[in-house]
Image (cartoon, rainbow, N blue to C red):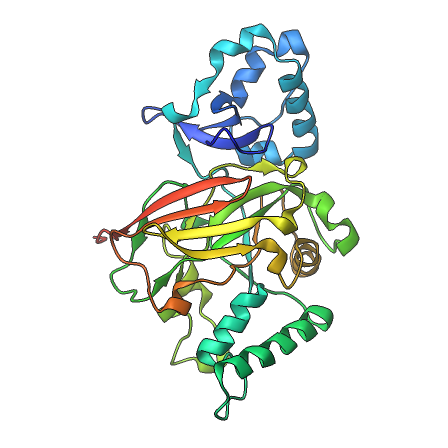
Length: 341
């Protein structure tokens, strides 16, 4: 963790020396296992529930966050021996959600770039890239005012840690990066009103929604549209983390900077203010279609600068560095996927 991060504390999942992963709280570059707080609770009266995994902890988010905050504000002397430097631990994906929902085509510049580069469904008829971009801009504003988000699911089995390798399948020719702000849901949500939606957010983390572009459409099933299973859910296609940062420490999630560098060269550099549909609108829409559960993730869309735009896709040996202001950094190296027997 970078000590300049602006959260008072964050939460994550860690392990050491190959032992079983544990849920922990992160503060000042140190980690305290949530289970260890029980050993110190007699002095403080703090009671946490579900401390074995972060998903269990989030399942009772409001009460647990209150108790954890209370503990850290009045931390007893006997807890200090249990803190471990974060650099001495392996950092895993912060939690294992039951559901991952993704919002597509949700950044203005991204959609306009796609229209300029490829047409984006606009009636081209010899139009220039700038004309296609302007037509897309008009459609975006109409969609923002009168339309609804476009959401799909991604399998949680694609999740890996923030510093783990990304395995590129040998039969995928266009693996692409999509760094995104991920919302962690903190309570069951069904038919939530937009004005109430942010009350259901536990916190935020970073996700890279890696996508096999060449698998996105099935040429033999054109009328059915996108093949999300094939394109979005291979193993390791979702680095997640490093931490869950509680929403109380993210002053304005609509003003976060997202950057992704490929081998040191910046490819994505945008603000979450460029979203077409706000986080609250996404929660409203998704909860009208499914029941969101504590620990579920909403990936809120990827800003401009994907490999599709540059026509440069991931290769073995590539190094990705992904950052979102206040949430930490991901480092991932791309490798060839090992052959399965």
